[in-house]
Amino acid sequence: MASTPTLWNFNPEPESSIITSKNNVEFNTTDKKSIGELSDFAVKKVINTQEGTIEKTPVNDNDIANKKYVDDTASGGGAATLTQDEYTGADCSGSNGEANRTLDIGVTSALVFINTSFYHLGTNYTIADTTVTFLAAMWDESPITICYI
Image: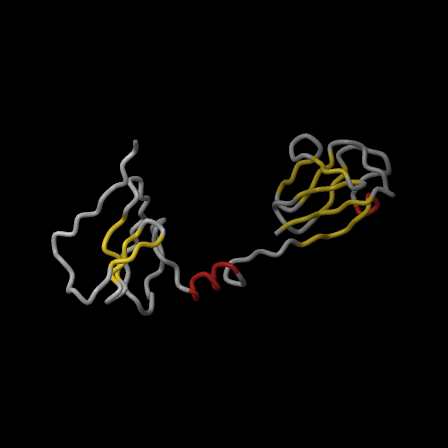
């Protein structure tokens, strides 16, 4: 028969206080403070702070973040906007249907889609400075979508 863990209180409470139990924690009804954990496998995470304003910028995994820090980090304080530019093969240098046609896109890093298909950097195109070189044949009517941050 399994025994129930017993909490021994060596500092008796005044006679006016009553000890009650809720969810494996005993409470002193006089000041509503916990006087012990009844579970043999209690998981406890301690966060050392006091009631009041948290002024510190969090740097460790268990630091508490204040509202201003969370708002600044989650919104406009670092959020990037994806830009999408549209071209056609006719905007490229070279002749219709040729390989190695180039297009100046104005950025040095981008995702490229031709006819809604994703092109792979190094396999289907290269970027040098702000110029994209398409390694396969490029047709004038082909829609080109350039996405960048």
